Image (tube, rainbow, N blue to C red; front, side, top):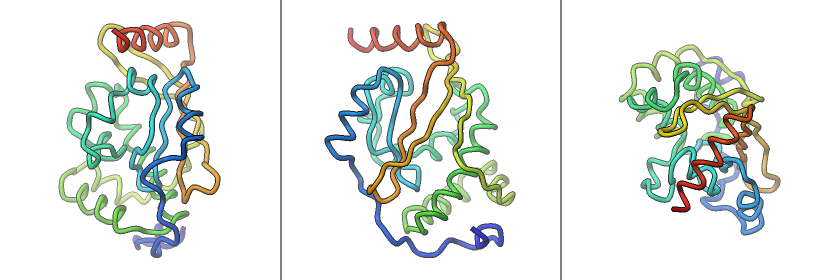
Length: 190
């Protein structure tokens, strides 16, 4: 990780992460009743469950290029559904640096950094700070129509033998958030 602190790019990636998950991992996602998704070290979302569709949005309806967590949090409209978008941007970018350091650089990660450096002043500012931080347990707030603010505790799990995939699980922290998730899932079923 020292090369990241020295403003250098990480060494080339050793293992290319898959662009999809195993059927067993998809079943794990599908059996969770809270929002969950799987991402690559370059923060590309490759799998998700029904609760994630209800709460976060339908990744299947988004072109693959747009299924990237960094692209989403640095999008100008992010503040409409992320009340604490600034904190989310900072923590996502710091964790991205750690993830690509662990996995090794890829053309995908380099292209993403170049793109966001060109399109986002906020990304350029935060990138220059060189912050490193693992995902850890964080609290996230999302604002959704019809249910208002939902508060989640995020947990991130490494997926063994996957080339660097991680599973994010968003657990509602209170009854109101749990009811909001249930309501959004019911609305999705209509």
